[in-house]
Length: 338
Ligand SMILES: [Zn+2]
Ligand SMILES: [Zn+2]
Image (cartoon, rainbow, N blue to C red; front, top):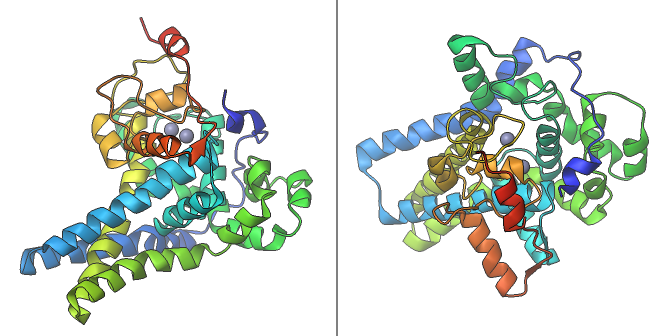
């Protein structure tokens, strides 16, 4: 059913090659510290000057656009290949997902395939429950998988350099006997690294992140005809949106492997969580997703709202998406817990 799971050949990550504490602090500051400072500034601005309709519009518009890039693009298209679509839509999903600043398309997809191949068992790079006994350990595991997990995966830092070195010769990277995390991650996605067009767009990741900040600033400036409007667009559609999309996505690792229901029989700790499903445009039906990772949709009951799935249904009706993969009602019924 799940093509991504079938091609994963990696073992658990090695424990060697840890990052030094200084590099961890720097990385945390760059990845999460700066966005959280931007969020705090947004709160300060709200308390002192309130919020305007244009601020709300730019925040919601950029949140939905970049979360769609993550959930429909990075997750359901690139990581799981649950449907096919046109090249312009692939490019749009890649750019919107990159604007979320959660790593390049290839890094995100490789790490996610790894997560599915080792969910909540040794090797999972962000399981909140793996090896955690007792409530205190569970609480620590929860916060580690929400805020800190990537600091224990050196490949997250080194992967961009690795792809630069190997983008012209993916076969060497795929067949190399080297056992570093970078080589292991690349071996989870032969289909993606052999796609030269995708690799080229992927390597412009930094440009897409900056575009995600510039776009709401330009819109805010043009719509108000002022520098102040541009600044507010940057704050609400850029900084605040960036921080909240990032934390909502990371909460799929922590919250939906800890809190929620498990209506379907699945070997891991994944849960369905309605609040997370709204915030992540459908990823929060995580027990459904882990039970059927090859499904393009996560809504298996009438009350389960899957906004990315609704967008995909619209694309399919318009003839812009095809080979959309769905589990049969019988296979879903067969996995229901008694
Ligand atoms: Zn998961
Ligand atoms: Zn997945």
